[in-house]
Image 1 (cartoon, rainbow, N blue to C red):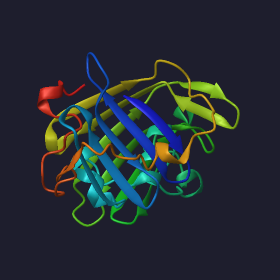
Image 2 (tube, one colour):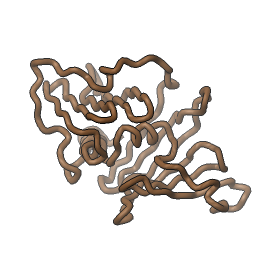
Image 3 (spheres, rainbow, N blue to C red):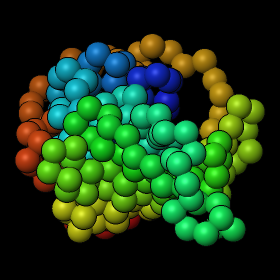
Image 4 (cartoon, helix red, strand yellow):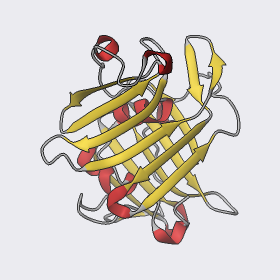
Length: 210
């Protein structure tokens, strides 16, 4: 997977196959979301809402939530230090949660101000766990770190997705059309985003789940 992120809400993901170009492109400029299946010459457009992205990513993430998840920061501000450590003080482990709209986010940090180590996303109404995320060590970058390793488990799909960074993020000026790509005239529009209850494309069984 290749990712281009421009906070607060612009993102582009390209899911690559073993050979050739991307199998699936998902892009959002914060207001519109675009999905492209290049090999099938199909595309789809919709409003950039969490529900719209659910079928593609398996999680109700808009651009801002997606950037937060991939960069390893809380989806919403955690209470300061979360009160007291949940394990003995020598472990320096705090667990706190906050609501981000329809999602409840729980995060574990080593100590107040340290990077996120673990995260749990759950449905704010039912309490059902949507994803469990573990973050590995981080690249040292100006203004903060970036996770070298992300392991995400989607319980409802019985899928575990592992992302290992091949290189540190590169700061660059990104063109606007990266996040709102133009569609070739030969491509046909069809339903790609699907419905929230449809099986997610990301991490599907035929992709190996990894």
